[in-house]
Image (cartoon, rainbow, N blue to C red; front, side, top):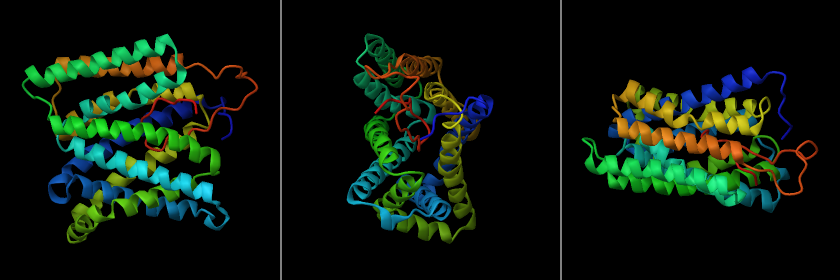
Length: 312
């Protein structure tokens, strides 16, 4: 990946904010499809449509790939399938804002483990306090969080950690967006058993099919494109800080499109997770012995659109 250009940082910031807005509103549309298609069915349709679009746009030269590249792209696709499938299963049961906030635990813990700084451990502690507040609100609040939904989003957070690692590996091994295209295709195949019944239902109702296509556009194609363009214009740390605002955008999308009200305690919890994510991103240290002015940045491909950027 080329070093970010600092000549047009405002465009880069706008692109990241556009991605953060696009993703949760795409998820909010997906929630409206769950009664007809099921959460896993919607996840399958979204990934399949995105895979077709990206494959057509990128057209990767697969004949030149070696076994290592195929292996990395395949594992990347498996993590994409698990992360997206379990996240959609989660937001079928719990509100969008808390779901995104809980999912951030995965990348935050990974960032702390990789950097081994006391400050990062403190930020993870702040995030854990936020998650604990969500749990307390779930027990004593008027709108308790569904425990199975929380479990699903924690599984998604685990897949998110694997996704970050595989994303960096694919970015290092495969130039351009070819790795993403193949990974999406692999994820589409993995989710196919859920997607076949959903596709049969969707093609019989044009409104459902259009909403599924809109979900793929807002939750996959637009954010992927915007983020790749943004990473060429702004530093990775700025990118990570901006993405840390995603739980707030998710809460807004849930309120506007789904009427999901959020209690003051939930808002405080989400704010703590956002603060932890911003703090972790700002305090990430560079590798020992690396001169930032001379060393190229580590390969990063933010293909889901909601991670604190961590070094490989």
